[in-house]
Amino acid sequence: MQLGLSIGVNAPGGVAAPSLPPIVLAAAPVIVGDDTLSGVLTLQPVQVVEPADAIVTRQWLRNSVPIPGETGSIYQKTFADSGADIRVLVRCFRAGYAPRFAYSNTISLVFGGWFLDGAMILGTPGIPPQPTVTASIVEV
Image (tube, rainbow, N blue to C red):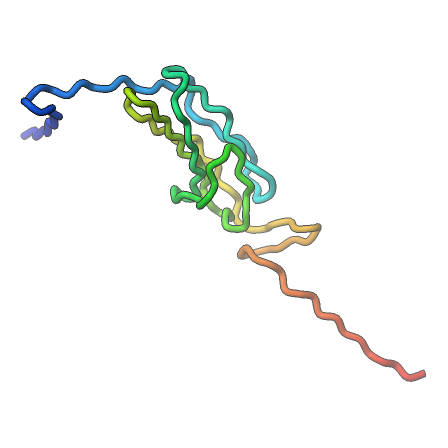
């Protein structure tokens, strides 16, 4: 037995609602950068073919969860990204067109070490403990 589901949208009076034309991108969104925790990831410019004046927004995601405040084309990697998958959700809007949502490629960041001013921090991300200083007085 085969089951199917058909959903239709009707405007008032039983007339089918007109479908909106899609927003067309020249290519899928692409981020570039390496899989280390240092440095940045960069979203390459998103080219909208039709309509050229569509509004484009970006949201960086860590393990598919929005990273608060990260909506630019460049993302500075942080301790929290250790072992995470990073990608960007691009949204395009324009009156008279169906909204367009597209995900970039994913960059999986390595888990572990972080370089900070020449010191290597291993294991879970965090700040290394303060060094201890000892002194002794020697009588001569």
